[in-house]
Image (tube, rainbow, N blue to C red):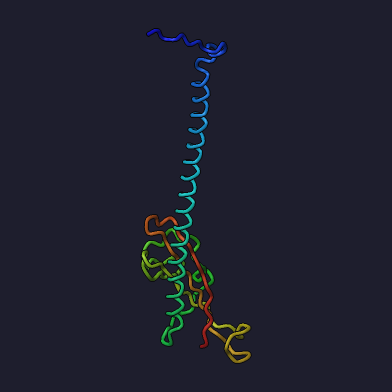
Length: 170
């Protein structure tokens, strides 16, 4: 049986390879979109890690600050007043805070690196109580500065420092 002769359309001969070029262009575009998406995802992962680290150090510092405030609030708490303005300054740089008991500017750090460090400084007695303080008008209060440091357990160069002033009846 004879096979019928099939003729190609007249313009089909001039289109050879055009589909391949169009497919390669689309593949290149899809590759560029994929690479851009991966870079964006990597950047977002780094930002999320940074936020998590910041929150961890903030929570550690907040916890240490509350421990320091609780220590000052105790009825038997007693601490000598700072000898001078220079001795009572808050630490300039917390990079030297490596362990509890490491003094800097007459500051003794308490706590642990894992739980947060805190330092208490007795600033002295005021002449009158601050506004909205539960004390008689014109009475004096003792002021304490509590400095807390929360450090990232994986990288101690990443830290959060918080301070509070605590007023206590003498």
